[in-house]
Each structure stands twice: as C-alpha cells, then as structure tokens.
Amino acid sequence: MVTLRRRAAQLAEEVRQLHAELERARRRHAVELEQARLEGTLRTARRVTHELRNVLAPVAGYGELLAIRCGGDEATLAERLKRSALEAAAFLAKLDAIERYREVEFAGELMLDLDAAARPRGG
Image 1 (cartoon, rainbow, N blue to C red):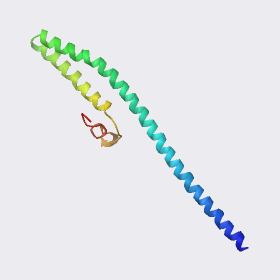
Image 2: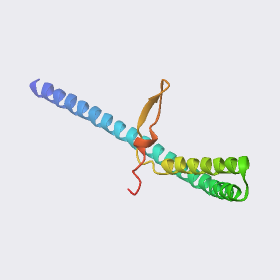
Image 3: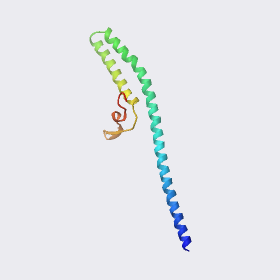
Image 4: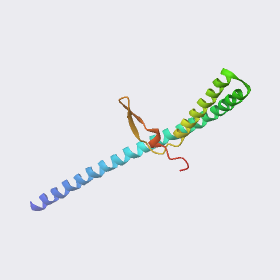
C-alpha cells in the first residue's frame, strides 16, 4: 500500500512537472510568434520607407529647382514643397531605423514611440 501511495505521489509530481514544462513551452512559442510577427512588420516597413524615399527624392529636387527658377510667391511655395519632402524623408528614415518596439500613450491610445524605438543616427 505504501508503495502504491509513493508511486501515485511520484506520478502526480511528474504530471505537475509536465504541466509546468508545457506552460513554459507555450510561453516561449507565444514570444517566438510575436517576434516573428514584429520582424515581418519591420521588414515591410523598411521596404515601404525605401520606396517612399525613392519617390520623395525627385519631389525635393524639383522643389529646389523651382525655387531657384521662380521668384516671389512661387519660390516660397517651391521651397515649402522641398522642405515638406525632406521632412517626410526624415520621418521615413526614423521608421527605417526601428529596432525595438516601444509604446507611448497618445490621445488615450497606445502607439509606437518612434523616437524610442529607432536606433540613434550613426548606430
């Protein structure tokens, strides 16, 4: 009888250990899935930023040329066009530099904190 109770206790402990191991494996799997999802998102963002910067480069260039060739209000508008294209390209460069996910609350919602998520320039 003692042997059966001891064996039952051993089996109960083995079952408890198996449950704990299964739970650890589930958590690891969830982390791996989240990392894979984030990596895919980052790769997509990098591709999109690359393509958009390719489109913005001539916009900034043509804005600069127009500012040089025009005068008055037209030159001011062309300079604004150039500046806006360069600002958009700088924003896209931040997106391209994302290395980790950091959130910040904005208007009651959590969203990506781009400055905290991006690697520093030159890094």
